Length: 320
Image (cartoon, rainbow, N blue to C red; front, top):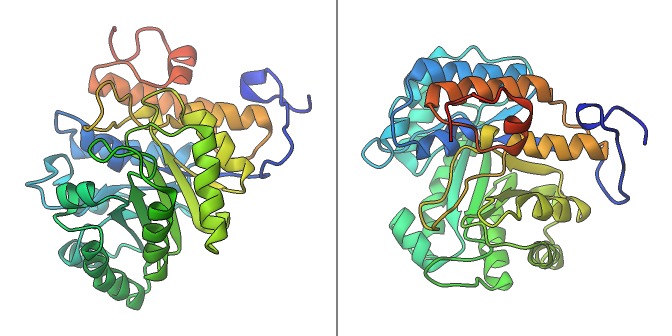
């Protein structure tokens, strides 16, 4: 035991872990887009501001998707106009196509993300494209973004399982992911969209990328906690050299394709684990918990994060 660790209970290090992990916060976009009710833009702006104050340096803020498909994010432009960027904080936005890129460029966005699929069925349902044709759709978006000096991140969904196709072969995921990186994306986030991954599967997938020449420095992981595996899967990824982890404050978000899906890995739960392991994140856990309690009160329900429930007031966000 060396330092105070998680809430003063000590730091116990494990061999083979990185000294520092970057958290890619997705709550304002991936989390709030799943809310049934429209969250007021002023609440979203305050949420993003509070996350930055808590020490998050990557905050995925919104998406320039057509409001017909995601009405919860129809205020993307207004939200960006309201923000006062904090020094050293990146505010990427998701863009689905060239029109989305146009809107992002109009707002002076410096970083975008595209969202691909590792399976045919999800590509057709989510993108109206096939597994192969999606790359032709993304290519001009990435090319134009790079030409304008933007950084481009890629998401790859259904990396561990698909509700229609079942298990997804590792080789298929690696091929799709490598093609997204070849377009010019600086980073690929591997998504367990329905939360069915387990630690051995995570290790095998990362080994598959390594065998294809894609090292952990170009990869991030994005786990959903449907079956309670998100932290175990994250720890496995860290032992394989991954240093970027997607998470959502308060565990906001979820997957509409899996019954009882419990949403994204909660940022607070991740920070608690990393603090206890002596892995630096730059995130102040107390401030982050306060932020999620504040948002839970405005959403009218308790946070899904176990750490928020343990450290926050018992009545935060209403009752169960």
